[in-house]
Image (cartoon, rainbow, N blue to C red; front, side):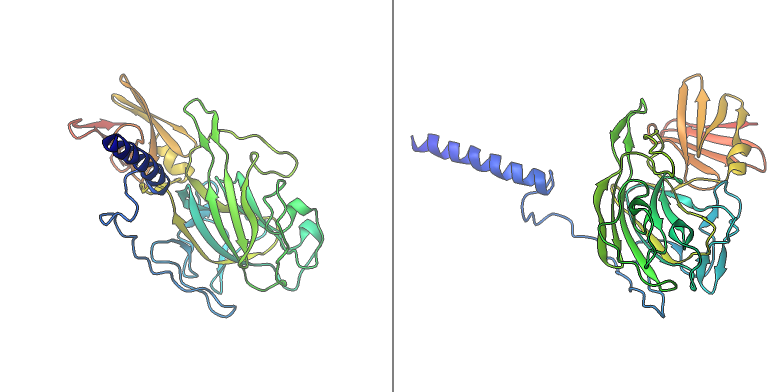
Length: 340
């Protein structure tokens, strides 16, 4: 009897501890002494109105006031936005500016200032936008200090979907902050939506969007449904005709470690399209498609010339000068050179 009770107790304890371990991490006991320690990260320094802060040591710095190397126009050509006294400033009529690098789940910090003195009213005053997904999903930037507009278009709104919980906008010309947690939508192989995008936004240290679920793309005149796209895509800043300024922009990538991905300029991607002997290269948005008798693979840019697949260990290196591609598949896949 005692043996039976002991075994029963062990089974119950095992079930309880196993359940708890699943919540805390499936491969670790509670207080497991062999569990790796968190990576040490220098948290950087916050900005003051007079002095720009410093990004965390593990962040991808997109703009620190020194240059515009991380930014381009939507087609990949050099952006017409300017570096004005250490701020990334919109030149009205120049079009959106986007990052060359693509991002998925991430933490973003960005600081912005609307024009002072202010001009216009409602949506015509200090208007810009911070976009995820290559222009698909917008957190509105607007001068909402004593400036009435429709609620889901005010500063900090998920445009045309969710107004901010509160209006914490500072006066025109004063630097403001967004700290954003972004979770992109996930799509199945067939293009169906598996999970919707989510976003949490702090403006000037105050929660204004609390893990809201996006119902689709954001837009002015419609609420367009989701359309399948890669998980990682560039961040973009909107040109809405106002010289809004940005500074101290950085990103910390979250989720499982992965290779950096870039959305190369249209001209570069188009230059790689063609037949290379047994390999045929086509383009789909920011990706290249490699096709051969053995099937097709979607390729992602790790640099200006190097691409990889996320499904099979395929590595592809382009040599633009000699119009060749070197393709290897797996450790024993050899290396095949094709000439265009």
